[in-house]
Image (tube, rainbow, N blue to C red; front, top):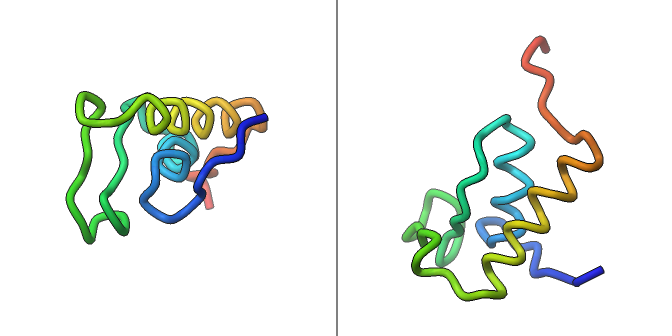
Length: 71
């Protein structure tokens, strides 16, 4: 298993968050903190950032980690 930077706003974090909130697969990350810095779109991401997003999304999906909107 690859070890990813898990900082808030990083690609791995955003992949996990997108699945958690039931959002579609949409690779992106932030230069610094989520929503407090520039959003980096898929076409601007490095191969390792794209892998981190993909892994974060897939790991959350495999674990079934998704928000219960009925709360």
